[in-house]
Image (cartoon, rainbow, N blue to C red; front, side, top):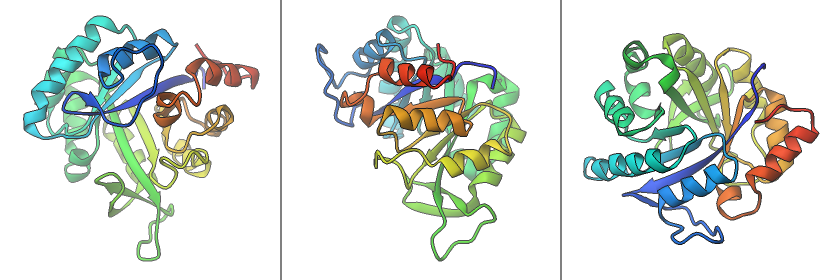
Length: 256
């Protein structure tokens, strides 16, 4: 792990508005993703991720417009995910100003999409989002984790660790590993899952799901995450990006 560990706030956006509650002070409009992205950029975020939760075609133009406004005013890298189904979708998002694009469901349905995007735009723009959970009694995978879709509601029976390995092989530039069991619990990242995926991929690994304390971010980095992503703890002001970076620095982890 040569590079500094990145700290990334994630915003869930629906029709151009941030949908998870946000109570930043001094923000004129806590629902405007551009305002929020700017506030996070000023607060020391290394990147900002937008997750477009209504990946319907009618909401698309709003998303492109929002990405464009953000790119004009926020000077940290911007990743946009949600509803990306083709290289054309990637092309439009990059033209609008996104630096990286996240793919999830469409890649599960058609893994060749990963290779198509990587060949056309380069691996560095492609983040493979893996929403993983521990297998229940009805599902058995070798790693004990399975890939889910629809926000963790639908199991696929696909081994999550094997899928991350395959995604990297097909050309993904980064893996965003989201623990659906830990998501929203603030009980800490799924460290075992991070270690298991880290063991099979050499590309950057972004840990997501479960952040509650600054120490949790330290643990995720120690488990092998190259970047740590969170939503609620930052939105609600429980933790600042500065506090998280200070904790990591104190633990001897390099941050920007």
